[in-house]
Length: 365
Image (cartoon, rainbow, N blue to C red; front, side, top):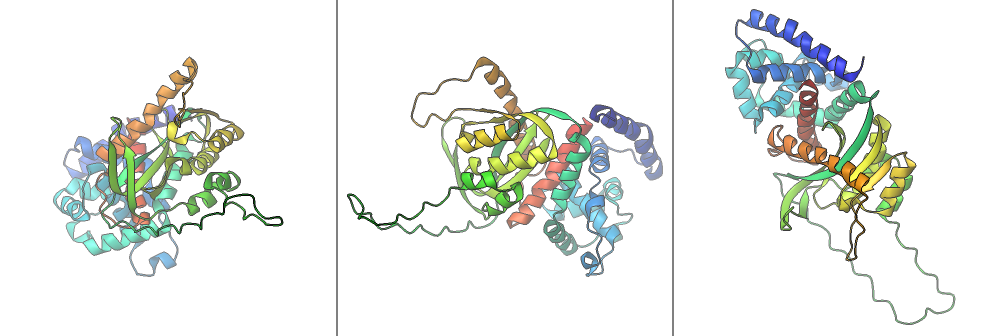
């Protein structure tokens, strides 16, 4: 079944069968937001990706409870609650929301500390990544995608930045020709050159993920600084995130392009790579072509005169606004501007709850 037909069938099934039955059982009409949440949870199926091993249950908690907690964290992203405490208050005061998440009674809602422990377990087990990857495979694996737009956006953290170790200056070199028989020290291989030979997973593991200070120029040319992280994303023409990565705020955008490109290529079939001038590097152009794509990257002048894009390339480059719309939605509607957890793994999980909710919401609408 094609993607459009599958989504239309699911939406129709929800409207005709599920929503009326829920309202009949609960005797309370669903609000528009509650209907949106039901559709998102039906599409993401997040409870299917929670680990079921005996080790995961060593604390004695029921898996059914963990399913409901995971659904509640998706609801937190959809409703934009800044804190877990606000989510718990909503679960206790809104019967429909509580039942949608899987809690029959107020007394069955776990404590805030239990929610926090579950969140830490989800982050450690990679629940967000598995749910997102399954969603992409189920909906886009058989689709031909025209363009993937690549970009990064600032994520403000709520923790102290890690202090960088100052670089040790190399001793000054003697002027003049080297003595006969002197062996020069080999130059350290740059990260982009190394990434060409690495797998996506190996390259991503090498990238820094600690909280630090990032700077960038705004669209008006002003310098902006923030403490936290960067969210890097590959987004298709419809605004659906195919691959994402979280790094330190100070890392340059270009350092994540090659692993993201390899990761997205393993998930979907697409034709064009669209990137801004920050990604204008020889290795990125070459890898894009070697993977069977056409790179359309804005030129970095580097102080020289730049030849403008050909008209057909400029027209395709305009499709890159899809990733800018994704960055805006994930921040304004799905919680990326309200990061209250600490540590890269937890921050990424918080963002992924919003990403899978955005993905499903975009499909459903």
